[in-house]
Image 1 (spheres, helix red, strand yellow):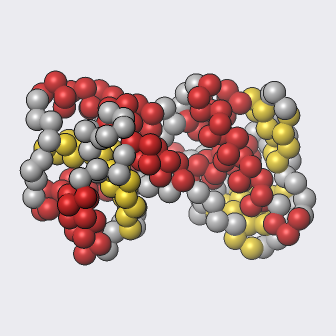
Image 2 (image 1 turned 90 degrees about the vertical axis):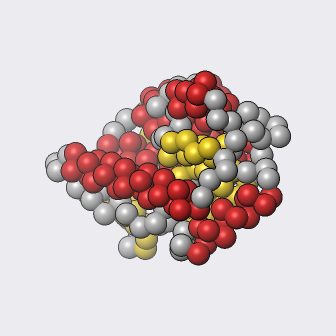
Length: 233
């Protein structure tokens, strides 16, 4: 895979800047957040591949941030924390973190951990691609075309740029074209859970997806069934 996009969540400006400079020098795309609330917002809007997360944030505990992200995403989370007690490490890893670095740390160690996570992401992507059913390589409905093998979406021959979450939602809907999929079904398929708190995120992504598919005021491919769910086609 290409170099992953990384979200730095760190309230200490000097450490945050040091990590940012290191990632920039290595050619990574990165975003920054100074607290837990900013981290949650950035994780949904930016859709990073990896989150470098400090546990001692000023507004939310880092473990709570992990749990909230894990309620809807499998993006990789590397903890970068001054907490060195084994209990803190176990709690963070049990909550869903992928790796744990204790402060102080060297930039060489940080980059090595990022590369290791990148290799795991690459392996997962290859496995997922190999497991895709060959029977449905493409979905076509009027001007809407989805190429599952290439993960490309076109409307009227023009590529539509979707976020990872938007693409996942569209793929599930396309695989069940013509059927009304309930909110809970979509949440389980894409987020891995059906928590009521995830409903707001689902609605936001669906509004954005509908706008992108109806380019130039064309046909509305996504249909909303109020109180029930959504249908494609």
